[in-house]
Amino acid sequence: MSPLEIITEQREGQTFMALVGELDIASAPRLEEGLEEVERDTPGTLVLDLRKVDFIDSTGLRAVIAADERARSAGRRFVVVRGPAAVERVFSVTQLDQRLDIVDDPGSL
Image (cartoon, rainbow, N blue to C red; front, side, top):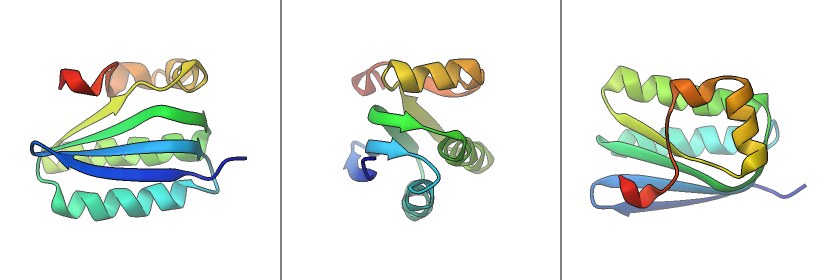
């Protein structure tokens, strides 16, 4: 089990949150707190980078969905950078890959 590391960075009017490790029931509350803090200060685009996430469970998915819903309600853009195959499979099986704004490369924003 690898703890979740959250790296937040501001770039050209966008906030990037890169996650490293496992996004699960133990770490999702940390992500939710980090998202809420960033959302207070981010009027524009919030990018959640999952490229270094080893594992995601339903609690992690719920945190991502909630962030997307809050962004839509506030008129902000919420973008997810596609994770590795195991993470991508979870998004595909749940059809969240059709609902969320998912990109392969954060440089393409």
